[in-house]
Image (cartoon, rainbow over all chains, first blue to last red; front, side, top):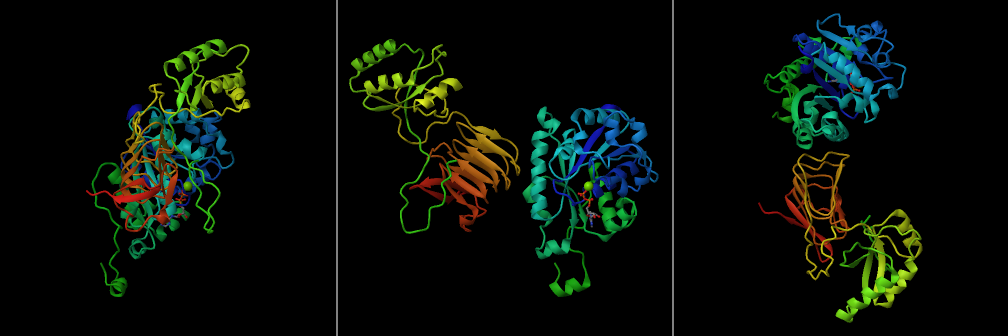
Length: 274
Length: 241
Ligand SMILES: Nc1ncnc2c1ncn2[C@@H]1O[C@H](COP(=O)(O)OP(=O)(O)O)[C@@H](O)[C@H]1O
Ligand SMILES: [Mg+2]
């Protein structure tokens, strides 16, 4: 649990609305459930919603920017999750603009977090502006969240280029940031019909290893409205996809689920099955 | 910059077209500005080889010239060289001040070329010039990235994504899928080629001739290919493996 063992993971995508925050919340929760001291940071300054999905928005007093500006200590700003031990949230500011995220400030806060956490998960805002660049700059590993559509894949490709050229690891010539693909909002039927890119299409274009496929599921919206990370919805499809994903991240080898069309009587009869 | 705009589809031939091209030029490297000394040295050269400077186009290289306090009389220099059979076409290198003065005298500033090499007259055939060195990119080139290999070949060990550019003065080799844009020989070297494992490019260009994806035939799409200029047109050939 020494400081040097802390791993910084950015959850990024380029495009908005693809499931970064959903993934950050469930991924961090899953790591903590498995016993790792984990903090998840909202880098989406001005548009914070990680605290909503984590169900702790009413407990936000101080935020990330307050800590960067030395207006509050980390201990004052960190919110301890009520359901899962070992899990902490560092919320974003609702009001300040992204310019407050300075490289020096972010580095100082991350270094302080490294003293007491094993995993630091950074929920990136969309785009390739300052907030997104700061979220990925100090990363050791990256979860690149992509939806199975051309524009999302293109934006992820762009982010992979930035990780490979503008992260601290790239600038210092260290071992490159380890890249993992999270294919979210995947609808096997639609990919099968050719309305969406398939898992293979996306892998062929991006050429990085697949950490998990998260199916498009109504449970995600329900659980985020209830302030519960979907990984805590036992038995749900998206929840178990995130569980598998965390186990794979920690080294387990599990077959990918939700990739092929589920056997449905009607579909089978209509389209002859596969 | 060397991309040519698609020709007008009208029946009339346009009055001219612009193309990038490569010439071998004599470079006159100027070390001092003593006009009398220059004239004397020139006269000696001509005595050794009469008719040698028969309207020879020359580029005046100012790199080795220390800035004289009272400026440079480019008009006088031009006249002097003209008188001895040289045709100055421009200058290269030199301080911004020198370049500005040259421009005022009607001498354009030429971009730096590949390594000066021998100052002797190059009589090599017009085949592919030897490129100084290759630049190797040992990772995929992602959307939004651009790599340029000045003076030589660009070798990519991986795919070139849609929205990425790979550019070289020499050849381009892509050991992966080429989905972005590849521009070989951008300084005008018509002998350069593009090689790729799978041709799915948004644009391919050699020495300014280009083709966009919709004009790449379905027969060539997705195949290992080499692209080169034949009779001034881009030719796509399958790489037999
Ligand atoms: N697997 C999924 N199935 C259905 N809806 C999803 C899924 N993942 C995310 N969403 C929905 O998509 C929207 C954007 O998700 P969010 O995680 O906030 O994306 P981002 O942080 O990338 O902008 C939310 O309404 C969320 O509920
Ligand atoms: Mg978000």
